[in-house]
Length: 123
Image (cartoon, rainbow, N blue to C red):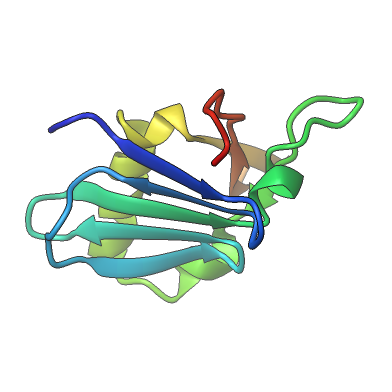
């Protein structure tokens, strides 16, 4: 896999990270602001689009903001959900999104992600 191509559009506050160009992909809406495009067959990320990037990546006084991805994943098959988790936990995606779990009780957890601030020249 080649180096990620990172583009930030300040006007729309959108960060687009392309891992591979020109590859057919399936779009998975993790949240209303985060879209992961992936190759199901190859089980790898193709691109990542983060809308309102500056807001999502902004730290609070308690640390990074976290967002539930439970509703986005609930509409997926078990197989596709497993593929998404595998992709989120591996490089290069884990350099941009951090997957963790909010534990409500010993039997119930909610998958959450946080957007990692990217030290790139915003242009």
